[in-house]
Image (tube, rainbow, N blue to C red):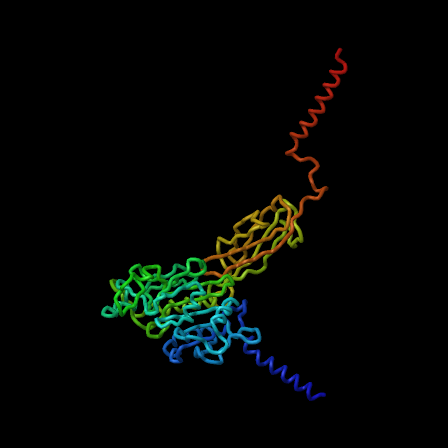
Length: 441
């Protein structure tokens, strides 16, 4: 009997040990950057041709697992647990993924709150295009089309087909692209895409200029191009409602060592840069994608009556109360106080009865005070905070509000004095009228 039991214990311990690598790299809200990323490649040579980008990620503490896109051992989930916290798809030509991964698996990965970087190219497959479409991005339907800009191309390509463009049309957001200004244009050679107008969550991060268009560079235009001007997005991002972040680029070369190290001069500009803005652009954007910046958390939501410290189980109408919450931002290494002037709280029942902007002590504490409305029922303290580039905060706490008890009303209500006077004057008038009527001969 002892032998079977010892064997069972051995296998139980073995199963626990086998799960340790998966749990060790799971996403932690208290340390968002301690993460493991799966990188799927068309060709293993991309590890060397894009090594600067990968080295940058590894230097920031990310553990990269490289696999070919058709590797039969690919699995992002096991025993109901995700093995990775981020996914990088540098496999634009892949018609299908190996192992158990498919388009539904990628979308489920994002729906579970994980992050995604997807790079397309001129040979982008239907698989990559369909994933992008599900994220609110539509690549040009013409599979031979590339972005062309005869007025905004890189000066080194003057004799070429003007498909290596130098773009400086960046999104104006220090949260997404960092506080350091991008001086040099970004070199881009690839396919353009448009944003689904019905998807309010997708944003252009790098746009084409007004002179750009999407077409086949090797043939003459027979029809007007479907994508033109600033409607062409070169790089877009999505922050889902579950705070998962997605980056979609129409160029795999955007991440390459060659373009990272290339000098750039935009045609028609006198400014010449020894190094393109690609490395800074991609590095800063990847920090945002992987929650090293713009990640908020709220803690210690409290409320109490003015002059008290304990949180009551119920309020009475017209009570004076205090509300506070602490909000912090992840800096990449630690949590620091988040400072803003647009955080609001609602005292909500079917609709907001009170809407107050919270004051801050510049140390992460937001607070306010207000009077409970003269309406009883079940209310909620609600903080719904949405700001460009930051994760969404959605907090709520339920609290009932009761009316006055019968013995809590004032004995005499000041506003009722006219009615009191009218009643007594009516009684006095009736008394006088009765005396006069009865005793008048």
